Image 1 (tube, rainbow, N blue to C red):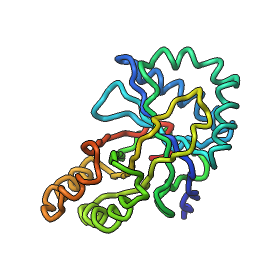
Image 2 (image 1 turned 180 degrees about the vertical axis):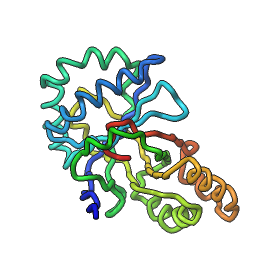
Image 3 (image 1 turned 90 degrees about the horizontal axis):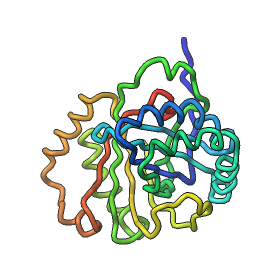
Image 4 (image 1 turned 120 degrees about the vertical axis):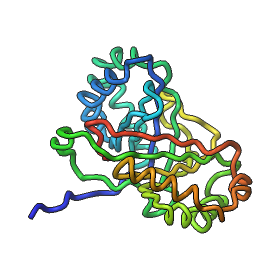
Amino acid sequence: MTEPAKTSNYSPIIELRRYTLHPNRRDELIGVFDEHFLEGQEHCGMKIIGQFTDMDDPDAFVWFRGFNDMRARQKALTAFYDGPVWGEHRHTANATMVDSDDVLLLHPAYDGLDFELPVSRNANQKAAPASSIFRIATYKLRAPAETGFIEFYKTDLAPILNDSGDRRIALLASEHSENSFTRLPVRLGENVLVSVSRFDSAAEEADFDRALADRMDFDQARLATWLIAPLVTARLKPTAGSLLR
């Protein structure tokens, strides 16, 4: 009997990075990223949680990376961006990009809502495409999530999402620490809550959408009082080298 893969929770500090690419250059960036940047970054002390294509935007690349704390983030990023792997491949990667500054700095909203990942990368992951679909929902808030929205989410919103079949794997809130590596911008002064869900298939995702649409008892007006903009949703497919699958 095959033993289940060991898992570990990660991470106290998380970057959600979304890149806008030149047309038809995404596969080129993914090739460089999966071949060189995965191990290069992790060797410097960070964790590449997952990387994805956007199912509704052919010129977008989305990924998460994690750190133990803000000091570790500064140390790891300095080591990588001053190191040989980035020095050798940065021009190839940068040539694919229109914009790489859409970055949210996050932390788990509360205990138990961070990513659970395999402890090590398995080469067999790259053998077959994943059928899973990941959905990132970003709530843009009037105030920090900790001032009341997290509790509203837990008591009012999460039960409806759960009953509709949401497969939530992480819930993340804005990290308001000073950017410890200013060479890479982050979106400052924003208050967000980011929900990450995983569906085993397109059919499971569609079932969730139908079930949620049938839930007419949720007070959309109450939700709107917390928000400064409509909910932003991205539907993602993991790349062949993504740890989060």
